[in-house]
Image (tube, rainbow, N blue to C red; front, side):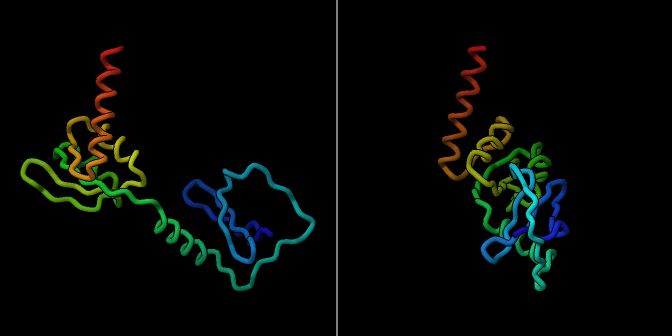
Amino acid sequence: MLFETANSARKRSTWYLVAAVEGGPRTYRVSRMREASVLDEAAVWPEDFRLAAYWERSTEEFCHNLPRYYATFLANPGVMRWIRYRGWRLQEEVNEGDRVRVKIRFDIEEEAVQFVLSFGGEVEVIEPDQLREKVLVGARRIVQNSRSG
């Protein structure tokens, strides 16, 4: 049974619907719904349900359960403004002579590969080793594709 329409929540421009499923609330992203129908029965609003408290708790749980992939790089100072732009993902920043050692949190490894390749030679992978190998494979493909064009 769905809670009343007033129990929808919005984050930026994305709308969510909070619904009672098997006795507990669940959150659904409205843009992912394929169809909806009107039921003859009225929606029942649980007396003890507080949308703001549920939304805060749900958001914290969602963020806590996001996948995490950490990688460490040496970056030239010229790209640091773009690295800092990632805000909360920047876990560590230490000056090391003419470069800056940074540790960044990504959701998945592929995101880290794209990040490194986007800076060309301005960022060097320190760890993990597997990321360094994937970046080298990607860089070789870029060179091959530029020669064949």
